[in-house]
Length: 304
Image (cartoon, rainbow, N blue to C red):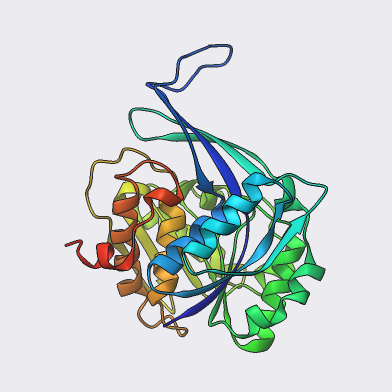
C-alpha cells in the first residue's frame, strides 16, 4: 500500500447546474443547486484514499460549521487529518461551480483558510511527510508551504508530485528543482510552456520544455483524449475510457489521486498507473459533484 501526504486545499463547493453558461451581464436560472465537499487538495486525497492509498493531509479549515463538516468527511474516508489546522480568524475555503448540459464547468474560488498556513505549519507536520512514499501538492495553497513540504520530502527520500493548478506563469525555480513529477492539463501546460497542446506531438514538445526546467517525469492530461507521459526518453499517449460526461469537476483530481495510489516510487509502472487513473476519471465525469463523484478501488477495477 502506497503512503501519500497531500499538502493542499479544502473547500465547501456550492454547485449550480445550468443549461448554458451565463454571458457577461446575463441573468439565468439554475436547474439544480447542491453543496458538496471539494478543494483540489482534498479531492486528490479522497481519490488516493478510495483507491487504496494510506493518505494524510496538511492544510487548514476555518473554525466554522463547513470546516467541521469537511474534517468529518475526510475522516470518513480514513484520511489522517492531524495535519489540518483550524484557523479561528478565517472561514473555510469555498468554491462556486457552474456546470452546463455539456458537462463543462466554470469555477470561482475563495481561499479563506487555505491561504492561512505556510512553511511553519508544514514543518510541524514533518512526520507525515517523512513517513510517506509520495508528497503531492497543488497551487490552491501558499507556494512557500509546498516548497517546504517538498524540501522535507527530498530529505526523506519521498517522491514529489506537483499538480500546477490553478496555473502559474512563473513557478518558483526552487520548487521546480524539488519536483520529481509534474501533472498539468492541456490548459495549464500551455500557461507554463507556451505550447498549445492538442496532439501527441504538441504534448511531446511541451514535455521537453518541462524537462528543461529540471523535472524528470511529465504527465499531461488531455481531456477526453487521455493522458500523455514522458520520462527517461520514453513517451506515449494512454487513451481515456469513453463515457458520457455529465460533470468534469474533480476529474483531474481523481486522476492524480488514483495514479499515486498504484504508482511505484521509481515510476517504473507509470503507463499502468495512468491507465488505472483513466479508469477512475471515467467514473468521476459520469457523476455530479466533486468528492461525491470520486470512485472506490473496487469500482475502478471493474472498468474494462
